[in-house]
Amino acid sequence: MKYYYHNLLIKYNNTLNTTVLIKNDKQLEKYVEVIKNDIVLGIDTEFRRVNSYFPELCLIQIASKYQLECVDVLSISNLKPLFDKLYDGKTLWVIHSSRQDIEALYYLSDRIPNLLFDTQIGASFLNYPLQVSYQSLTEKLQNVFLDKKYTRFDWRIRPLPNAVLQYALDDVKYLLPNYNTLTKELKNKGKLDWAEEEVELLLNKDTYKPNFRKILKKTKGISKISHQNQENAFRLILWRESAAQQKNKPRRWIMSDEALIAYADGTRKLSNNQNILFEKFIRKTKLKVRPKEALVVQKPLSETEKLLINQLKEKINHLSLKYAIPSELICSSKNLVKFMRGDNTLSINRGWRSKIFKI
Image 1 (tube, helix red, strand yellow):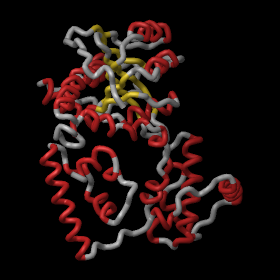
Image 2: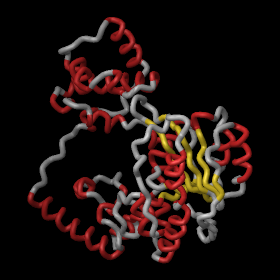
Image 3: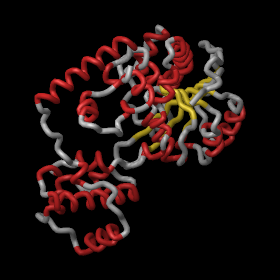
């Protein structure tokens, strides 16, 4: 994926125009008209996910060439003009640690961006920590310290205090300057393609759908029951997930892990009505994940395997120093074992990782 605008110089200073808050359809339409020709936008979101299955998007912050804006999602009835701009196929989203922001917008718009630069990912290819924060990165690149005192603020509160709005705007204010600095350095070091390749997973809708394999593994008590009962448990997990989505409630509010395991191993019984609904659901549902496969216990390493793993780690560490990138970015210790045992689905088998690993 090539961005023809990587060399675009974005004029940016501290005199950016700012609207306090866009909170009605008319204001939003005017704003979209203002940014219609911008092809690079810094984006951040504020959402709440305490008592719901889906994230409740409350605010969208956007940095364009000359403006910083907050869009009050809770007050606007028609977000389509904004979504049409954001998902027009030409607009590059610049986000820091983008997965949750894209997810929150996806559940509201049912769309995924076409072009993305994640400044956290970009920074990792320049030997910053894998999980470097927006605040740390901005302090390093822009010599600006950002206060995080409203991290746990309830973004559903209205009206939003001015200090809170300023805090929200700060979360996008330095995205474009950071983007410019990072892309320039990545290009100089020949790693820009690597950073672009790394975001491809985030541009796939499937990334934001429930991962039943992970949900199964994280279900408390799942490993202590028989294989047959694990199959029952997985069917109950599917049913619980469907109910949680329909009611927009956390899955454990629908059924706790403890209750689910008890129903699966027969120590508790579903009510007649529950059983009818459950059986009806299962008749329409196909198992795409088999518990036997998902819950397979990794065999202890043999002495020969331990020796080979140490050799692979040495090679990874050498590549980490040579290319100035964190070793975990190349391959995690967990995936290194899978790679050694012949798993061909891992990212180390393709793209930039495969190229440097074979050198």
